[in-house]
Image (cartoon, rainbow, N blue to C red; front, side):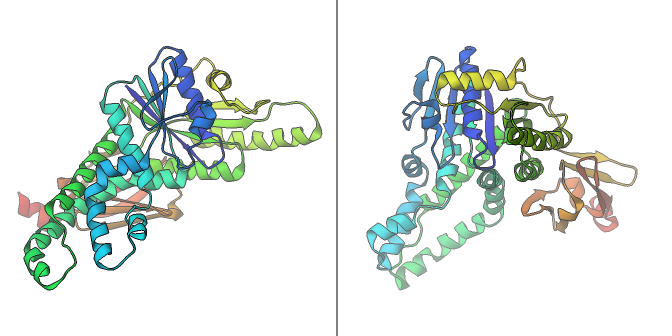
Length: 395
């Protein structure tokens, strides 16, 4: 089983690249499913085949799926939505408005990932290709399982205990319904499912993320930031597809584009090496339909295996030193000016630009003090020294 997520700035051709990869793999005999988490839903147009809420055969070993967000929402979140609707109803909100207000923002992408988990767990497929939303939405989505886990571990148990204690009192003094156990059970179920999603997508033996870009300065800059952010959240990038590369030759107008793109391709090579970089030329026609997609994939990947995985690599590690411990976190292309680090009790809050991750410290580091931090060859290395009071007290 192999899982590949494609993401990139909007308009760079990530749906085309993901569909081409799936088409190529299916043509080599792998039973392949391609799923889109992009609300734009352009996958069916790209493969030139209508897609349904369940896997639909496109051709031979290739299947596609268009997630029905409402259907998945009812499967995973119906108890919570029913409770919220009852609260709004008691408040005098119009039933149609209440229906709209109880649909969570971003639920479509979240539920699409839950569907990916369901398909992977079915063991039906050799390959699952995920056409993700543009990078900003994808990064928020991939950060959600760990962020929700933090909330569930620290806040949710107390909230549930308070709810049980207060339910009889609230019921006597207010007409607003109080959440029942099934509401809390639904939230816990969603938390467990999202935790499984994260475990699946961070498994370096099966899963990876692939970046798609075009050789333009703004796009390349965003792709660099995306690589850093994905590493911060613990996701492995396995390669870069550089799309719409102008071939040499032609008039002065095209020659100018070729020269500008070569500068950016040099930046891509310098930034992302040793990751493989696959070049896809600007095609004479729009790559729509399986024949065009297969040609796109064959030209982009050439003799390379599009499903090869880099050797496993510890994105985060703890090593013993003479003075104490070093915690190292992969942050390729990070700029120290964008970094912020805060120790908060038993947690370490790492911020890179607008992205933040809360790391639960291993037990040994909880009894240590942060001594220093430095960026070294694409890794943030944080040095810890034992806290004499806590360390001695534990002996």
